[in-house]
Amino acid sequence: MQNATLHQLKVFEAVARHSSFTRAAEELFLTQPTVSMQVKQLSKTVGMPLFEQIGKRLYLTPAGKELYSTCQEVFDRLSQFEIAIADLKGLKQGTLRIAVVTTAKYVIPRILGPFCQRYPGIDISLTVTNHQYIFDSLSVNRDDLYIISQLPDDSEAQTHPFMENPLVVLAPGNHPLAHEKDIPLERLAEEPFIMREPGSGTRKAVQKLFDDHGISMRVKLDLGSNEAIKQAIAGGLGVSVLSKHTLALEGLNSQLAILDVEGFPIHRQWYVVYPSGKQLSAIAQAFFDYLLNEGKQVAERTAFQGLL
Ligand code: PGA
Image (tube, rainbow, N blue to C red; front, side, top):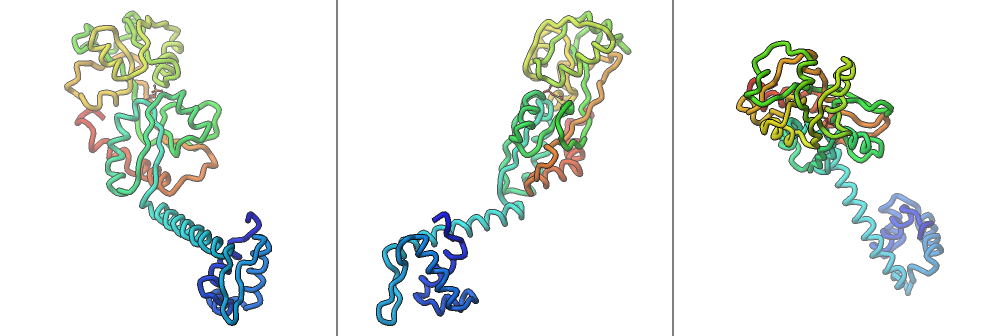
């Protein structure tokens, strides 16, 4: 059946439905010899006759009946597919797959809220992970869109900045440096430091700043989570550098203080990224446009007052 064409199946289906070559030809705007020829070729492909003529009437053979019900299933599936595609084009249904770095989880869900209200039939798959994992996903084209704050060195990707993502120094609220101004980097380096895990973009940015100044740090603890680091700071284990957005929910009620250290905040951006040459789905394109046009305003509107 691999050699049968969709056109032949359509012609056969019409003949079977009308029990008539003439009426099928009229319906399909074809000549009767063309219709007969298509059915003849199809029955050759099947290897059995599909119709039998008894007197003036045309009947389906057992093979013809099998093929007729197969045709109905095939055409049903095709029309369901057409509806699904029309819905996708109209952004009525489908899944948007986004992978974001750990800090974007403080903002992206709030940006997604109004977007999902606008397109209620859309499901979201949101992966939150560090830069290294995002770069891996990007290289195998696993998701529709990626949100990162450090661009990959070697990949061909479309990158568009949409919002600031500054890194700040955090210490317990009662830390002796909490009210000091212009704290030298050397002084900060004397404090026990809590560092994100290898593969983290935050870690890379902090390490680079210290390396650029030729200063080494006293890393006391490696932790793979921004939230765990905040708890560790509050517990007096040390100081750390994290995105200011990690304070999103506690805001000014936080038990943590932002220290005024030379070289900070480290100014960075979030970028929305996808591989060059990737054909974005209608949903991904709609979210991409929304993020660039409205994302920042929505995030600011819904953020804890005074934080951004
Ligand atoms: P990370 O990235 O989770 O890889 O540290 C966070 C960020 O750069 O904001």
